[in-house]
Length: 545
Image (cartoon, rainbow, N blue to C red; front, side):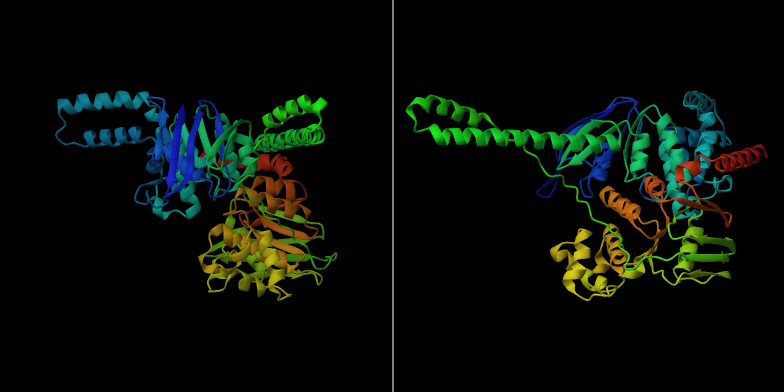
């Protein structure tokens, strides 16, 4: 168990948290939610001991081990992948190294033998003999193939490093597990594996995530940060949302009835206060009026953007024809004779572990990259708006946000342009910010403003939820669902894929698997089952060899 007792954190004169009291108990998974800037990551740092509160304290049940997801992707660059994972249990790793050092001594003494025996006993108690196989199983589950288990962390890609650090946090069955955005940079298969791991995890988990489906799947409780307080709800994210909305509705209804009663009493007092025969009743009603207090309904600190993609023209029947697209990058054929035809009602989610393949296809279709072979043709009625995974080049200039967006608008009117920015929460003077100093989330909101103002009837979106908060992701999800045109997209957000796509395309080893189905149906299909079985068998054969 871990609890916060009267925790307050002040940054300058501002209190980020004020007298927070909350208890996290064994066997539960808590989703820590709140608007950007509410202090979710900061609170996890306080719980983990990385940050001292201004006042109050954190209490952990004596003898329990706490583990948290490291955010420094370069901290373990000089260690092997397997060692980095095992370091998740610091004491076990220390014993392993101490044992090795003793056994490597040339002048092995009786004292060394006694010490080694003590270490061996502690090692066995901690299931040390299974440590390497447990670490390997975690890495395999997260998609880190065996050939990478013994290389140095510095030789991995960014997404691979994230998976290794996640395996480190999960390793060794910690009593308390703190995870800050664990699904970031994970492919959908790795997220599914993590979901199953956490569902079966028997100790305490506290997780921050913007992935609504993930929170719904794994969380037993929801801790909502708003205005420096933390309110605990029993249930997952959807239950929290319904409960919080119901509470607000009930408070508003109670206030409405109170206001009606206040008006009724005031009218009586006004009519009969000067009437001698009614003066006692008027006095009684004055006392009753003084006792009525309206409930304080604080507006949430959450702010929802409004995303509405409206095409300037209706799309025709001929949308896109792709024939034998092939592309090799750094000696690897990421697209191998890809062919498909899109119809006017298609909303296609591209899935699969190879992010480079999806990004390459999108770049080719957006005209930013040439294929090695094959060709594609857009229909004459189509106009495309492209959201790249890496948008940094768009903002490498001194433009203000208003000037930046105006260049993409057919109507060069500041009021018109500011209307689109306002929908994305850039109000008033925010429009005069220089684009080169924007945060990742602000840049994404600018890109979505650009797509809205374009009036395109085809959207190409490459991981658009990166850097967005829960509210913006919800708004984007709604905008994609009601968009009347064609969408090609990739996303790690399960709920966006499931609620938006009516067609799933997976790129496996450069080849295309194309199914007209929902995402959940696709995951449950016989083909996916066979693919997983094949992968498992191949994995087992590698171990046997």
